[in-house]
Length: 221
Image: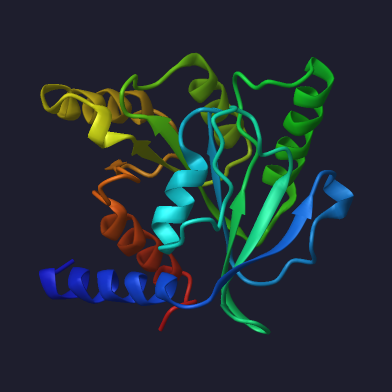
């Protein structure tokens, strides 16, 4: 891809999220999902990874997704429409956090079953973005999510978060560590983006990557 092509995609990504983005649906059970329609991309990650903050940064909103100091607040699949009402271009899906959550084992089990069913039965789902805390790198719950995505043959990409809280000397090591962990995984996209919801680093690159995915699927001309 030429620099001009990359610049065009980055501008498309910027415009995509500069338009209308709004919450449209919540599902706590698999039979409560909205009818399939536009292409969907989902966001997964450990409960304290900063998923809501990244969604807000990606869309240029302050409160599109709720943020909380209590991990595990997202307790259902939340759907957000991107585009003019009735002419959606894309849907964003905020998935319940995995790993530690301040909830009962029964509730966590229910969320896990919901995620499994969604990942295995949603043909409109184009990719899952797995958010990983850039301060710590891959942890066992992340690897378990990779296993699930690989077994579901679902394309996924790792997005590192909290770059502003990571020592500069550790940044490349974190990226290299993730790439090494993904090397033999069949469904993994071989590119890692390091982001910061606080400073905006990596957000334009993330938007560009989403625009590229949509272009490849013929969603963006």
